[in-house]
Image 1 (cartoon, one colour):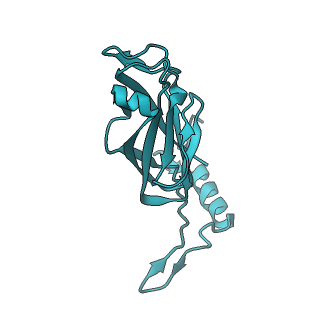
Image 2 (tube, rainbow, N blue to C red):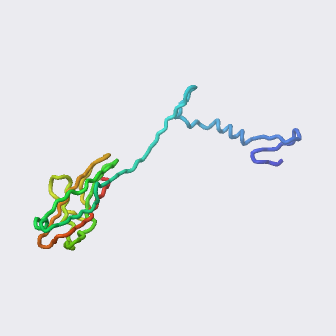
Image 3 (tube, rainbow, N blue to C red):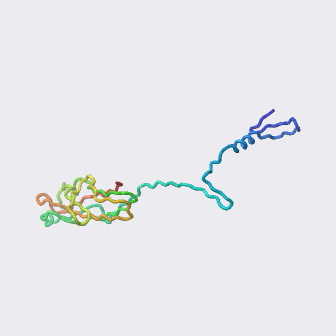
Length: 187
């Protein structure tokens, strides 16, 4: 007797091929023995309800913007150098974050860029910074220093103030420029 996949041909009784499906019958019998897996589903004549759980992992989303460029340019006059310092308003940083955050400030280089007769080699630490208008100034370094911190926020403003120190023996009138880095990180 020839066999086809899943079918048996029997010509003995009628002379015509008849099809039997032993695999199909076996599959139907086995399906009756398998337990139901949709236990969480409730159904009746009018409705069918199931409970699903959705899990979403949202990473840290942070934003930092400045209301003016990050570089500091001081046009030092002979009077400023004699006075020993010059005060200037810095930028206001705006922080947006869905997690705890920390705002750090640092110098992009160890020295100011000098122009128009200003002294070469002026240290970055001659620029002091502070947040707000109260308290002393912290000398700027190439190592990041924490300026502000907070928890999730849709808009927190951090206003910076600068004070440039001059040495009347070595600094000369001219233009001094320094790029300040503002870095927003998670705590």
